[in-house]
Image (cartoon, rainbow over all chains, first blue to last red):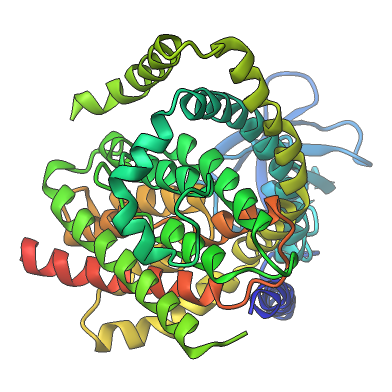
Length: 290
Length: 172
């Protein structure tokens, strides 16, 4: 399933990016090679011309024709495909669009200019996204290292002091129903219950380290090491559906949405998704599918 | 609501104080427990790269918009506003992406609209399924995931439908 989902995403990305780009090419969306002409006026300054392009007043030198350019400032007022050309021209300097002057006709007071050519916008975007995310993934993992060390350190103290065992005894009835094949005294139950508690309280950055710890302990009692056990699937499904009594409302609130009236819908919806997760895993287990 | 911010510091205080009371060598045990953190984080890197780069490509390519335009008519037949579809599709894939979708919806439809309420409920009620899967199974080198993804996506889907139904019942 994961293989198909993963490969499907990549294939679909490249194919549709290619499709969009070929279509752009066909209709010449970016008007590649088009020569724009505009009337200019002489300024009082020596050998300078002044021209109005895209609502901006631009100056250029009249002496040399060869390789002169017009620097157009990028703003919201600029036509959309011009904005895209600017973005494509230089990732670092999106604020300036540089057009090449091709001809200056001093009799008619006209200049001609060409915008940079743009090809394969989506394909370039796909490439950039792939590399950006690859390095972001490493940053994400390194960030997780510190948080993991913190929570696993605290967890170890709580384990040694007997706090976790006490907590497990409290919610063991629920755990026994979800994970019937795990021994009552196995330490994995501690990690699982802490992960669930952290999820319910909306402590996302505590839940992940404890969840990873639980997975590692589940792996110890797993018979085939490269294959997920039923317990792992159950634990993962519960985690992806995340029962939250204190949902991540802070973020939603920051965005200006009235949170207090959303609490009830969120708790109801998250309960539905968790029940669905548990039921579907139980059904898969019952069907005996390998 | 503000009390939620007190949970973590009080929890840390409680764990340390209880540990001291039970005569645990708190500092040594903390370091001992923390040692695993780094190794695990390094181990999940390839899994994260694999998952995140594919998702990033998918979003950058415009394939998502294509998919949305195909599914949207089905949504409107069912009476679900098609505007919430991006949230339903992005939520299992990326956390930051779904925050972006929510921000966009707030901007276009306003924070009080039913669309934003449904989307925010979807956002709050499920997790980034593929990220959780990559991290949890990556940490223990599980490559055969069996039915885990299906179960996770079934859960997401049920949560989304529930979000739509509950919000329509409560807010209209």
